[in-house]
Amino acid sequence: MGLEHEYSRAALEKLIEATEAVAGSLNVDIKAYIDAARMDADFIAKDVSNLNHADKIKHAGALIHRDYEVLVLDSYARSNDARTYG
Image (cartoon, rainbow, N blue to C red; front, side, top):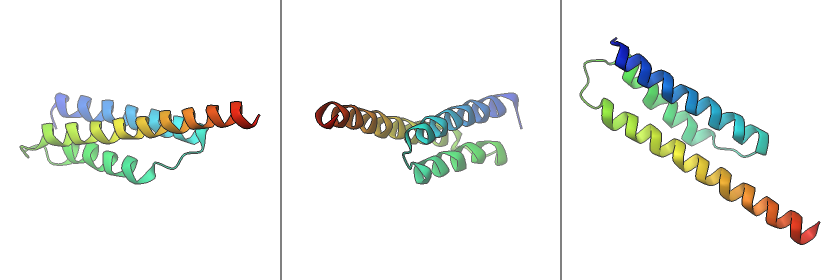
């Protein structure tokens, strides 16, 4: 595996771990999308001759972005609930 594949996989893995940590602290379940993003990250490391790496990286990034949107919306909803019912 080339260095560029390892860097891409490692960067995605760090984003995935950070997203999981934030989700865990907020008690939000994002497991399905995180697992799919992790599969994409693993794919680029396992099959280095495949020509779909850019697509897999983009897809994993989109899944992680979707999870952050869920986390932001959930956090916003909780803060509004706290102000309304607090």
